[in-house]
Amino acid sequence: MREKMRPIISKLSHLLEIATSLIIIAAVSMGIFHMAVYIFTNGDVDQSKFETFFANIMSMVVGLEFVKMLVRQTPAAVLDVLLFAVARQIIIYHHSALDNLVGVIAVAGLFAIRKYLFVVTFGICEKDKRKAMEDSQMHEELHPSAPNEGPDHPV
Image (cartoon, rainbow, N blue to C red; front, side, top):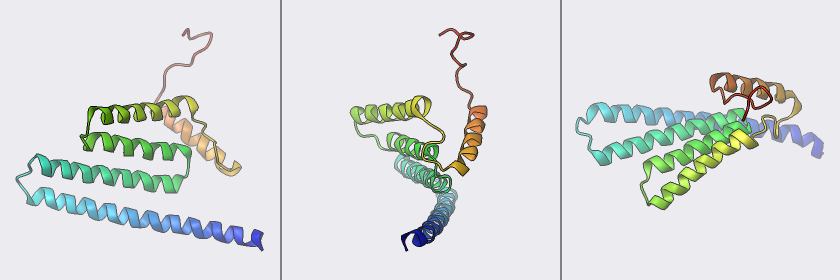
């Protein structure tokens, strides 16, 4: 009985993830539309209105990254969402210098995790490993890292 339910539950959770993604995309699309209307109808944008506008835009970006995380379901997608969320927190909210320092350390930690601790195929089933490797190679082509260390490349 348990083995028969597993594929059904997996399929249902996948469909719910897709439905959630569509709802988030619809909400972000409506938000973008409302922000565009706001920009073009209000000629006088002061500092507080701009900060609110910017906070809303950054929230939409985090929402879109969250959708990509639901679709891709890779560790890289999770790191991207965390990076955008922490960056949004640092940029939008101006609390104290200590809060900003903690945020910057968090971003540096996320970059360090991506650079030194990231395993492309972590938690991915065998059939998806090839796709993850292709995505990783594409990422490396788009964002080349430092030259490889080795006998030909002194440290």
